[in-house]
Image (cartoon, rainbow over all chains, first blue to last red):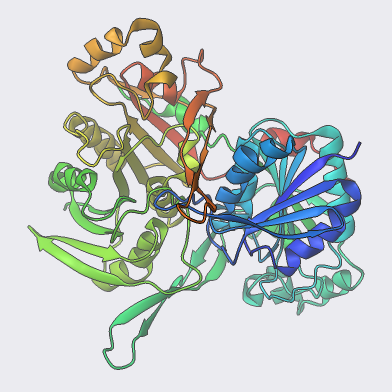
Length: 281
Length: 281
C-alpha cells in the first residue's frame, strides 16, 4: 500500500515549486496538500495566536486533495494533523515542504517558512523534509531537482529519521549562479564561474550530506521616504557574508560547488558544551 | 563605563514584562528599547518580507529611549543593528528579550517571538538572553524575577557567551501553578501542588542550568462556526504533553519544581549524529 504524504510550503498553494513537488512525488504516495493561500516567505515558525484562520478545498485532481489555509505554514501543518487528517483517518508517513523559491541553507533556515513546516512536522512525530532551490524567481527552473527528491524521499520512507530530527535539502541553480548574489560565491568569484557553470550544465554533481555553515546577513535594512511627508519606512534586503568560507563540510560549500546540500537538523537546540561549563550557584 | 544593552520583546513596548525588565536592568547599563508596537506572540523568527515597516520614538525617560516598530520582533533587532544603533555610534554588549508573558521552555521556544529576538541578537554577534515567566496574563507577577535577572545578566556581561550560543531563561509562577495548564504538572498532580506552593511562597528555589525537554502540544486546533453561514474557522489552542516526564535534567523539571530554568541554546542545529550516519552515494 502506498504511504500518505502531507505536502506544504511557504510560497502558497499556487507556487510553481509546489506544483513541481506534487508531480515528482505523485508516483511515491497518496498526497494531501495543505498550503497557505498566498505567499508566506520569511514566516519561520510563526503561529497565528491573535486571530482565527480558515481552510478551503481548492482542487481535487487525480485523487490529490489541495487545501488552502489563511494562516502561516506552521498553522497549515497543525490544522492538517489536528483536524483534517484525523477526519480522513490518515496518519501520514512523511511531511514534505517546498520546493521553496529561494535558498534556505545556513542561517536562512531560521527565517524559513519552508523549514517551519518541517519543524512542525517533526514536532508532530513524523519524518519531515524541506526542499529549496537557490532561486527566488517565480519561474525558477526546478527540472534538475526531481531525481534527487525521489531518491531522498524513498530513502526516508524506507529508513525513517530519528525523533526530533529532520532534513533541510537545498539545490543550487543549474546555471552556476548561486543564490541571490554572485558576489558571495567564492568559487564563481575566483574562477569567473566557469567551473560551476560547466558542472551545472551536466546537472548537479551529486549529493553532499553536510553541516550548516555559519554566515551572516549584512546591509539588511533599506530606508525609504514617503513622498510628500518624507517619513521613513524600512524594507528588509541584504547580502550574505560567509563566516567560514574555507570549510569544505558545509551546506554553503556544497551549493557553491554544484552539489545538492542535505543538512540533517535537530530540534534539540540545547548547547550541550555550554550546559556542561556554565555554572551558577 | 556602563555597557549598552538593547532590549526588545514580543508582547509590545507597553507590556508589563518589558517595563519590569527596564526597571531591573537600569542600574546595569545604558538601555535602548526597540520593541513591536503591539502584541507579536508566536511570531518565532518571522521577518517581514512582503511589505515595509516603520519605527517611531515613543518615549525618552531618564535617558532611556524607547522605539516602537510595526514589524516583527526579529525586524526590531535588524532595524536596531542596521539603522538605529550605527547612527547612534553604539555597539551593544548584550541583547535582552522579555520578560515574556508566557512559557518559552521546551518546544515553545520554536514559536517564541521572545526567542526570535534572542536568535537574531545572536546572529548579529552579540550575547543574547531571553527571559520568560510561565504566566500569560497581562498583569502577571514578575516581582520574584529581578534578583535572578541581575545575576544572570551580570555573569553574561562579565564572561560573554560563545558565538552562535544564547540563553533561554524561564521562570515558574510563584504561586506554584505551572504554565497554562495545571494538568501537565506531574508534581502538582501527585502532590496536590503543596510542595511547589510551599517552595514558591519563599520565592524560587534557585537556578537550574538545564537542557530542553522534549514535549508535544496536543488538541492544538479548535473549530468554530460562523453564525449564519456556519462556515468553519479555526483557533490555535491546546495542552502540553510531556514526552520525558521522569527526566530530572530538563527545563520542564526545573519549572515544575520551583527553579529558574536556564537553557543554553545553540544556533547550530546540525544533527551531528545523523550527519555521521546518513550516507548517500
